[in-house]
Length: 345
Ligand code: DAH
Image 1 (cartoon, rainbow, N blue to C red):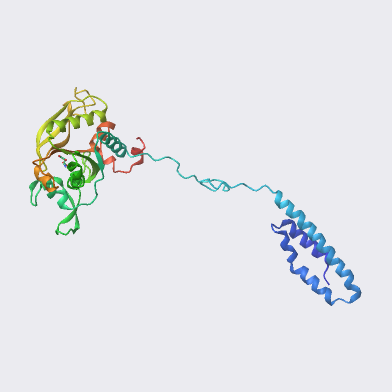
Image 2: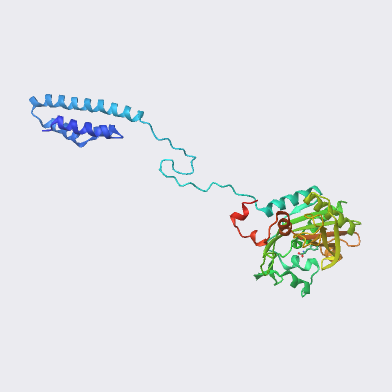
């Protein structure tokens, strides 16, 4: 026969510790007690039934008390937005430093902004191209010795002319496409004015001034009666706006297959007022970029009649401008992903 007192003590103790005290009503001891009742002689059954009821009532009272107690308990709040578990004693914090915009990207944004305000449309270049755009369309026929000056990376796969694809070694690879795309502007009496500032690749021996991956800014301007004076004035205006000061400029004859005449363009050193400093190697001048009047063959290959239209183009290195402006001594820092370098900007 069940001893209702010992069952009560046992179940009350369980209720006082349980997180779900109601469950205790399903205890097997209670069920056993109820089934015993049926088999008891009738004179004992009434007392035993009363004892079972008393037991259940006291359990229910204890359950109600325990449930109230559980509701009152202060629960440790959880901050679901915290980057760690607030309930652990020693949270390990995730690094919270902010990233910075790469110095080359900062300058590209500035340069694009100036050129856009001067009326140049901005085009992205590409990271893989064919030899037609990289060379032929720029008046370097197959076997032209100047192709060798460009240390071009090539793929194993070949294009439909059985020539390997290239990783463009200059942004001039965009000239033919841009001119073709904007030709309707010329037909409508508007000049073509476009720029492409993007990444280029060369198989260089690496040193503080040479990197396999770097950036160039290319400009193209085509209209009727365009002459070299307009080229010089455009570049001078752009560079004075970029360096925020008046500058002298100088052009020397040079050679590129895609311009005739071609020039090497220099500007008076913006850092020493031409007195001579480390940036300009004490000369007062900085040789900055290549430029010239677009070769008639290049215009023709893009569908423009060179007897009607003339144009100028230029292409220069962005990394060099950033290095001079920010006093960076080694171009390889740019691609190094060194955070202590990048966080300075
Ligand atoms: N593509 C030349 C280079 O990488 C630079 C250049 C020179 C671009 C003259 C031009 C240009 O558009 O007209 O060396």
